[in-house]
Image (tube, rainbow, N blue to C red; front, side):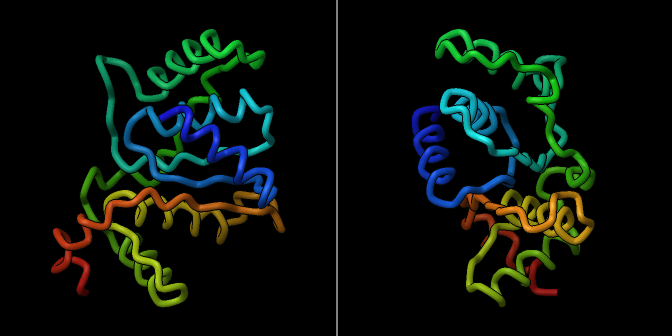
Length: 168
């Protein structure tokens, strides 16, 4: 996972000069791989991991687990950056409904992207994260005129499972 994330980051950063990178997060792997890639290649990308559920692991928060793995990766890869809990923080504002609970916000985000770009989002992961990005943009939570990337991590099969719920 880490190798793919770091190569992906290097290509994206050089090609697009992005500053904000939004993605759905349910476990630690995606965020850790991206964060270590940023540290390894000294990239200037601000990760915005949108938590899609309220997961906790082994009596720890997901933030704590992410930080532990970041420290391990930092040592193994000889990354000079020192990581703190703020490097492992997730955006939790959108996980309140719970895992797999589809709200009008996810439905709106899915419809908006499908109608404007022809891109389908799943309602559990990418739909929730895309709504989080829309909310950040509409409420000026990021710098104006910044380059923003949304990473669609898949999940299309969930669209079929939630088909009836998505109709309204």
